[in-house]
Length: 258
Image (cartoon, rainbow, N blue to C red; front, side, top):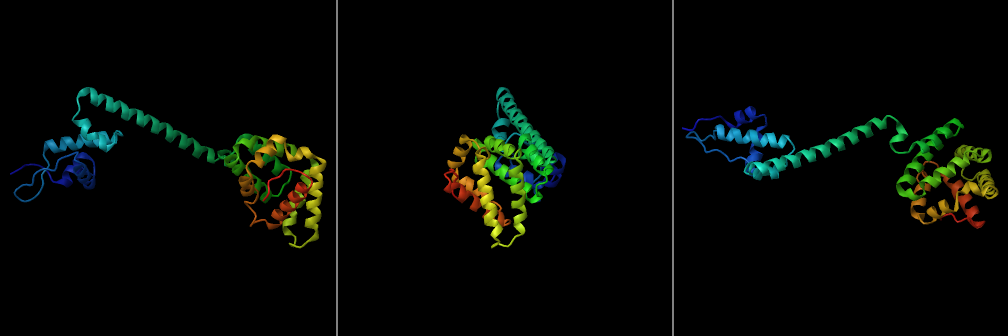
């Protein structure tokens, strides 16, 4: 009669589950012991030793597919495999640290998605008294611009900084935010769009640099996605933007079409 322990006892001694032991058997990492006269498989010291070796290597980060050949390798091959496993763990640790740092940065709100320069612009908008919904929409536009048109992002930031130095732009933009409470057929919408277009034409630097405008021209699809991302939530603002851009295009300003 074979002496040994049951699969459940073997799993407990080794520190794994019965399911894990069976998985090791299925992969051929540990041979199943013979059944005793009662029909039960009994795990002896040899099987327990093999289970401990497999569990230890798996816990150390060695892929299961590599453990079988590793246990049958010579000392040099074994050392090389362990060194490779160590490198993988080091890489994983670096990735986990980066993920942890990202979680820490999340407590900083916008700073996880935007650089400090962009966050400063948003802070300045709030300080100037812009509507919180408008600031939120600009935050989303900045995130989308950075992801979809990275080559034009810095120019976009410079354009916003320049606009926030212009009292006329600030006044018109605040009026545009207030317009969201107007009726869709309110004649003031057309009047405001004209005033905004006229202000841009009188101050062309507010439209950005030629390089920045060129970046948008070459990314018309992205421009449309960014410009219309809140169209359902702010239909009047979307209409104001469309009317203003139409007037600017008619004046020869190269703005991508919606």
